[in-house]
Amino acid sequence: MTKKKLKIDGMHCTSCAMNIDFDLEDVQGIKSAKTSYASQVCEVIFDEGKVDVKTIFGVIEKIGYKIRG
Image (cartoon, rainbow, N blue to C red; front, side, top):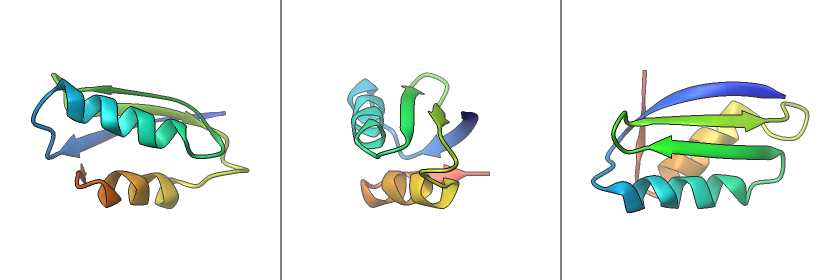
């Protein structure tokens, strides 16, 4: 398993963070996603053999948020 911290732009409330978590956790290969509105960071634990970082970025960007950095 791989752990990655992603800086997210575009969140306006805690519901935004929850939306990111729900959408990421629906992706096969992602074990968990914990997004903090306060710190604007999403911590994702995933199996690189089943899902890659590009796919994770795509899920986040598809729902309207930007990856920073």
